[in-house]
Image 1 (tube, rainbow, N blue to C red):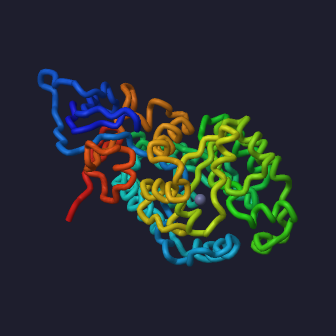
Image 2: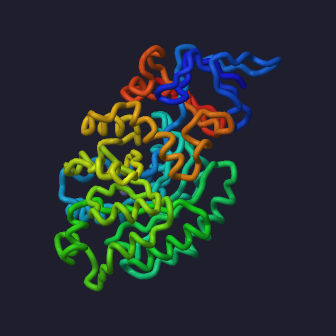
Image 3: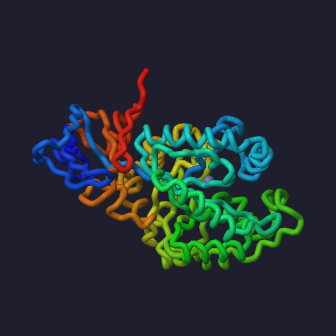
Amino acid sequence: MLILADALVSAPDRVLRPGRLRVSGRRILEAGANLRPKNGEEILELPGITLAAGFLNLHAHLELAPLHGKIPPALPFAGWLRQILSLLPGLHSTARTASILESSRKAAETGTTTVLTILSDPAALAGLAGTLPRIWWALEFMDLHGDPGPARQMERLAAWLSRHPGADWKAALSPHAPYSASPGLYRECARLASELHLPFTTHWAESPEEEELFRSGGGPLRQLLPQSWAHGKLSERLESMPPASLVAHGNHLAETDFPILSARDCVAVHCPTSHAWFGRQPFPLQRFRQHRLPVVLGTDSPASSDNRCFDLRLEARTFHQTHPQVPYAEIWPMLTTLPAKALGQEGILGSLQPGAEADWVGWKVDPSADPAAAILTSTDPAEIISVAGRLHRPERI
Ligand SMILES: [Zn+2]
């Protein structure tokens, strides 16, 4: 099939006008400005549309949308945690399943074709037949109340995934956070991630309370943890992380943490709307850059942000507000090529190059404008979305 659009964003500084994309099944064959239809080739005409690679969101909680607005913003982290811990048991698996479907559709319609979502309740997958975007299900583990048996749970997830080969779903592992997962659990998750070649992610250094807990053994977070909680060393967990781990947040890293993460080619997932929602200190972008640690953008959950639609454009705009020195052309790779590389999908996702998956999005923006800025500052849903060559047009009423 040949897709005829007004423009195609090959990279923020490389825009083809007009934009032509040739796809076969789930793969991109060619991208260019001068591609001509072949004999009998199917044509998809998209006048006024700019084609771009779909975004990747490497930190989301698709199952938690019903908790949006239930907890007020700007609480200290321990206060927020106390409230969410009281709300989570009331969020049943069926409500989580509905949330996953609805949230993933909203993410896709706002340009995201890949989501790595934290899965804390595997029962929420029951009855799910497919999602619009491709999904990495990052099964979450804690061991505050006994051994969660990660190996057995990962086997069950793998068996479930094998029953849905057409759904573009994959597995990942996530020890929740250093205060809820022991060094032993981090090691076991890291072992499984390496053995099974799966992405590894964890919440890390999110709040000052977490930093205080490990520095002093006390503080407000300690009061939420069981009496028997024994923290062990933070560095022990950090050093057990496998290469290319995805570190969600990283707001309060110690100076000594950066070289450890850098040596492992880790990637930080910064979630700007959640950061703003908690009223946090500025994100230490410069320190990540000094240590050559890539930073990508994620949405986190609507229980701790205003981003109800899992819209990465809103994350980009919020990030640009707090880091006006970073132009949209530099933010663009934080949503496309960098997260694709972090997932081991360089050249396959986040790009419209030949051989890549046909994960593209058609935007109605001024085709003569700077495309990265025009797309990231747009607020309407995309006109058309393709995931692995499957087309979806948001319904307009
Ligand atoms: Zn999170």
